[in-house]
Length: 282
Ligand code: GLU
Image (cartoon, helix red, strand yellow):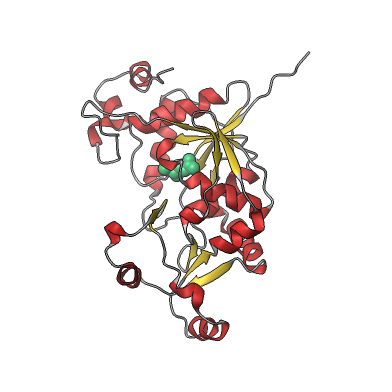
């Protein structure tokens, strides 16, 4: 008899506002994809300036009200900065990281008209200014405590990994386009990790086998595959789902206050009704 294969999935919201109907859809999607397996919840609170404890509590409240159950303990990213620092150390030891002292303005000046400049998943592609600094110049600037970010040298990274692919249940077999992502920022002075590094490390540590999330993050998966290969982490399968849109065809966002789960609940909607609003079109 063939044993069924169960998935480990996760829902990974950032506590920067109340969850809205689009989040309900995404959470229910992840829970359904885990049926028979394990469904995890992760709080993505690396951005101390924007995350709030009351929103984290709101996440638990809203998901419980929707009838979801997840494994505990919940992984809160802000409790795990040491894991991200360890990953950065490895990339640094492998010579794949460099400090970047450019401000947003410097980058803008360098690329000229931003709307004509090539774009990657994180916006305008970094033109590589600080990649060209000599080791002495870098050392002097770091010693002078010049604020800087740490960037991945994508060309070196791709040389090391060779061609990569990932498998997505909705979008198929996809070739990783690393150079199209540019030298992405992996850490900053005030935050020892970026979204990209933290999710990659967390999905591996939590044993996630199927990453489900909105297709607005599909481009980020190219970066995550590269980081997995560089860090020797397992490759999960992906399932980037479509985004729920309102009647105007626009996707829901945190600014749509009337469509937060809390507002719908206070408006007298039942959990069953809200689940139905967040129904997944098959
Ligand atoms: N924290 C991200 C968000 O709220 C989701 C990250 C992910 O699922 O990989 O958009």
